Image (cartoon, rainbow, N blue to C red; front, side, top):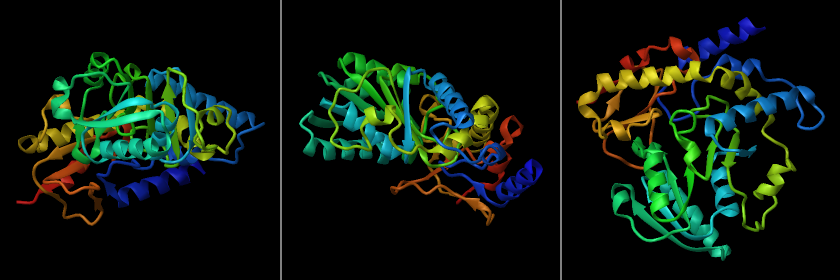
Length: 328
């Protein structure tokens, strides 16, 4: 059975070469580890769940974690509803930081805990003054292929006497220093190499807000009062046990991209995320197998993402970058 699944997964990955932001290419362990399960009274599943949670705590560096069915945006709403209050500063980096701004303002209309929501451009990080209660930012902004080092965001939080929340959907596991944040959120399917369907919130501080929704109340999630993302958790177990093995595929793909398109890079090394690369030219491919990334906003140039060889692990050499060319 395992050989049959491995052969099928290889065939699927060979037939579609992805340069998108997630989910990653399929790893055979994603599928092999699936099985009948239940969240209560199923000792085998509980062992899997505890293994995944323990590993995610180690990767994030934070002490507490909840999971539920949903996307990264679901986790963002959980963060905003349960933690954010007072004066909120959004670090503007692109489409996904705009989502943080939108969520904050929507909740502000119905929640007196949030007093104000301000947006400041990431290029002016060192010029931001004043005091805030929360800084909320995307440490990796996929829509612009941009990384803001978490150490820089932490310096801003200290300077403004703020707590720090991160949308870590595009950075978790791939970048370092998530432990410097007070709260982070992410999904299962990008740099964690799991199947879609689960989202997570990790935190070191207790939520203080009263939440007027059952499903997004972190206290209910801590008590597992809803059906969890059981099969997605199963898909993560074996992959996370060999996480560094699969992460090497992303590193190799990124290195190959940087070497081939070094003359077209938009950002310096400091702002280069592992997940993706922004170049100032249009990227094309002559292969019908290739799926290029289409950002949700219009940009000049192209974003290329680097999780399309995840299934190869440390054996990846970035060869799929050879399918890409500049549209002259």
